Image (cartoon, rainbow, N blue to C red; front, side, top):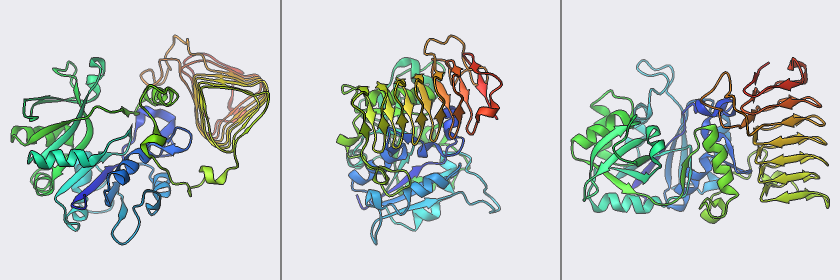
Length: 418
């Protein structure tokens, strides 16, 4: 695999994740207690014996850059192994922010050309999955393809979210629709591409088009050079609040196929807030824990049901957390009831607060397409007052303090800002 260069697209805004990306890039969003979303792509790279990686960043990149560091956590540090952060070339005459996926790679053609390769593997840094890229590269070489797209079958009702292809008997893609309103097929692109390096460079230098799915892949199809590689394992795009919550519920379901530990997914344990900074979890004899993932450094004196709890979380006696995702160093006071909530880091829930209503009928008033299934979002560094009641499909913005609450009750679909 030394002849394959990897480019990870990690610069998207990820706006559908709402306040979870208010202070970080989408690939840097925490996942599963101890991971970040980009850990899956980086670990797949490591486990596929790939050694040269460029990570294309853009939106709020600092936490992502800090997390990746020198790449040592993924064995990507050394004389012949490298991960390099590639920010936008701001200030140059012909470029500012990346205008799309293809434009991002185009702006870094010097990185590609200075590292001779046979193929370029292009990945998204915001998906949860396990994949051995060696098999895809071998398929690409065997059929002598110029461009190969990893594809998998998705539910028909989700086809509008993806690039959709139709394959002939030889695996050649003969029809392509990017996020169609009414798809002809439910075979969807996973956002994973293998390009012949010379073909990629030529394609990007001879056009100003900005996106792979909308522009570069349809052109390759017209040239008869676009092929599909069928993938049948676990893969989820966690780009929405619902899919992010669903993936965490998959983590707690042994039959889902999602198993980061079995897959060999690793994270940067030296980064701030990682498990190496925490003592073992303390579980009180009176605590009740069912079907949940509890991280190091937690103190559990209450009840945790079907939830994922990150390092350093304290759940006091009489508190109950159900069907929720609670991130690092959050304090949940006595008597608090939390249900179907995604809570970001360093939050505080006052005594007796009741947060969440999975049966909420009203979508969020500000973001009805983001929150409409009963999930409530609590932003980083926010505080919920003693005795407060928060409905479903609610959003509490980062840094909201008790002084910002107009009253103790936030009805379903409410957004609270500073």
